[in-house]
Image (cartoon, rainbow over all chains, first blue to last red; front, side, top):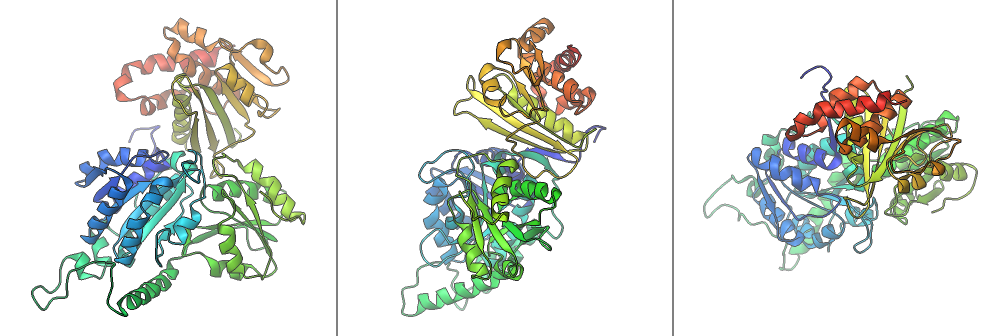
Length: 368
Length: 179
């Protein structure tokens, strides 16, 4: 490294996702192009073969997600990525991953919707990501990065969680998270699971590929169809226990909440933009804080419950009202939950979030 | 040197708006600052409108998007129409005199009105006009030393065009020294 150069690299969120995935142990990528996530496959088409992995441009999103199911069933760290409408096409396969207890990582750099929408930022896929998205009782673990560094770091967490729980993990960003260029340290985060140790997290001989062989061995069959009486019920109880177990993976970030009268709750790109607004108001001695859910599922409801007495909340999100419902469920009537929505597709700055916070501080309700 | 800077750089696709945005962010990072760069494209690329926002800060950057910038680099008329009303009244704008009529410029705003195309043409290549504009911005804002930005060129311009590094550095300097 010569003078003037940096130990940090200036990369887009999408590029940080690709670096993070490869460094975390990704071996197979399957995907189909769509803006605003195209730098992910673009980078991986070069990085992954160099790292001894396999890059496949699938014939469609449906093809990609089923390749992911196949690779995951073989115990291979694998991922796909897409944006909103492409992720909708993948929902059947994501439900199959969940129903079969198969690990897989799905990155959604969301675009404005519904329908084909636009290419701008949007958090309109919140419900789809955190409530399952596909059919049946299934849940994805959902991570919401806000910076390019988090895009890199969270890929390690995504693969570790996918293997530990044999479950689909979704990394949910948007056009701002995807397209922003920021300095990133390409160093595995503290405590990251080594790539070669991912498979040991699985505790399932069918995915790990070892265990008893021969006629006495348990069938090496991964499936999501259970037709015999009571079989599916047992399967769903197992999933229910697993989802309860996932609750310990909850992550969130607080800033200035201790003496806050009003806590802004925001995630992802709006989370960081709202932080700018909160800091500005703190500079004017306004008692405002920020709560940023980092895992959207599991949702940090216990932390919000603890903060609720004597405080008010303002949910800010780039959709027409989704996470607001989860905050209201968490707070359960203990304190008022206001809401301010930024319409999908718009590029919003911190200045534009100051006024809505001031309105709620001044005793008015939220707005869109 | 103040800790926080932001700039919106705007022009036609093909004028090199994204390249100087990248260069500024790279140089800021190499100077040890926190930086964000975010592009906004029109639906088309070459010939369409394009703009990007760069933020430089010694503190962690919250919002990468800026509604009312402290400075702008405006390379064509549509960009002046769009961003001049949003520029902070105490801000500064670098306006391309080669393509923007003087009567459109708000005289109440500190403006460097510089014919970047003509300056670049004199250096030998009109494609260097973006570098001329960035040089003028560096002079007007004192955000980073000229040399830091010149040194960063090698990390932003692809190896294939390495032979053009000196002329890009010269264009930055010509913009910097324009008065």
